[in-house]
Length: 543
Image (spheres, rainbow, N blue to C red):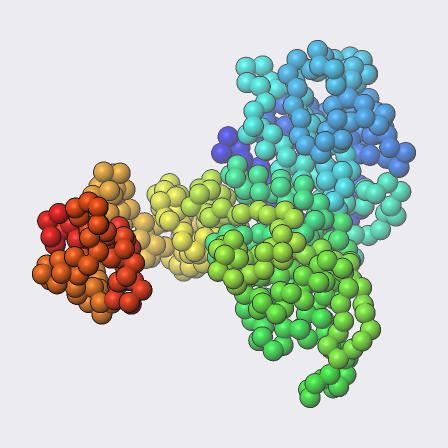
């Protein structure tokens, strides 16, 4: 299904690159194209889109082919059928032998004079709310049942459909049909403004599903540098209920420690020498919106405590001001650090971590989601081609293999840079095919073999050698420590025997080694354990 996922991604991104729909009619037409493409990729005989109405009913907005005439405006009661179940749970739902399932509503079949054999329904989620469902039905004869890959592809189309429905003014019901083309360039429809992440791999699909289901809870994104945490944070803002507010970014490493409190909470005029006017902080700017704390692991400890107070109460004070202010904002934080290790090292507060990580999502590196590599490369090539006014070059089979072999330690950021460099070389050469030679050093890097994985026996052998070498190197140091601790008595058998004779048992032969050891410890002449002392005695005296 990787090819289908890639085709779905390219179609959706092409649709998103267009100008926002100018009204309801244009939005419905694009929605029809989107539904038809989804049905084509999944091999389905039909599809439909249903929206929740003000009274709670679910009405059909659009259906493919002749079904549209019969179904348009048809309503299901709240909770009725698979659509109602999907809206209740917020999760995709598929049915085999649909008429035999208790959640199937036969009313639609009777209206269409047909039989639903298979059904796949995905929720439409916009601004943190379930606004409807998208249903695909009856795979063509000879095709297998819906599988996990089918559900992921359908969910991708459902996400795009929800964005289109809102952008076209179709939802909420009764919304004025305004000219959406007059909206500012920051419209949620523009992919160049990070409207939607690119991900066709199952792991990224899971990440995107979890972000959608996080609703408006605080979100912590972790992962290596360059995996796209800022991109996903912006997308999480755009699909949540705070999308109407500002998306305010704070790059924690870029702020000097002494400016942190003023930057975050703002200051009053005269609070310090350069405070010549009142200045709101980033938190105030994010009211009814989202505050994105990028690289939260760099936040100084004193500010961690103050941020925690704000997260607990929603209240704060500007620097130099006694007035208590209140702000409502969603907090999204991101870091490439292991915060649990930072907590153990005393560099990050445990209670702050729990506050930030209401939903914690780890973004996998690009090398662990190879299905996304070609999709990202092709989409970026399309953008570059439009920016330069040329046709997008194709990726040769050798180039695809090269991109899949690379380790991409810099993740998405490294991939985009490499593609941009290769694109410029390609158009300079006047070619229409992107070849491995256009990637320069990247081809050489990909040709370098991976270091062979060591077998467990080899690792154990190597570890044993290292331990033996370490013991050998530490022996002189141990001897020196022993002598400085008064343990030189253990190195002279005659002196040791004379000393132990003072501690012979009265009623039995032998020495009371425990009493001798305690005496040496008390005198400050020995700094080893009793067991080690007994071993030394046995070795030196042969007893």
